Image (cartoon, rainbow, N blue to C red; front, top):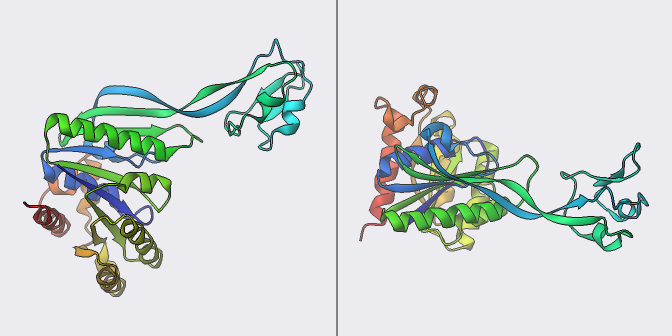
Length: 292
């Protein structure tokens, strides 16, 4: 069983569209949507939910209004301005979005009116799709600890893949180089970077490639909409050689991407076109690398 993580240096490169197409081509795979801050893979795979669980991480302060004496001590020690005194009742009021769960308020409370509860940060789900089992999640608005949720999603995906005895785990990772990306690629078998032929895309793909190199993960790269700026695409291909990444090809701009998405499909499920042919070639090359 091999785990391929599809990532990008920045948002908007077409990473999720490519990941969904590869999941369709894999036929036998468990899919994991690890872009938990902006999970969109379900829009293309139309999942039927079979399991849903609350994700809790960290803590948030709570107030016992009957015990609170309104002294304001907690408000004065809170560095995040998460506590205010209600102008009517005079009791402490917690802003859960501002609370960092540091515990300072509970330490100084004169009436023991403050305590901590586990924070509900989002949900993770297991669903069935036409491409296979999908493990996905979404953080609540303003919630944190996306790296921890990513690790949970990957762990569940691997467990299901072992149970179902499928040869592939296809992961749609988050963009950028933050902790969620690190949680997505750690111990993966290979990383596919979907780059973009723009100045920012060229800069950011190198950063994420260097991150994969740091973890000694085999690295593939392709350029989406590369025919829009052939010069930058050629520069990215040359940089791939320097960074010891295997350049798999250039996906041309193709309006069939949009037409397929309007139908809730991936591009490889619609009529054959230039972009779908290149994506099929990408998948063939990736499989060839892992043949016994």
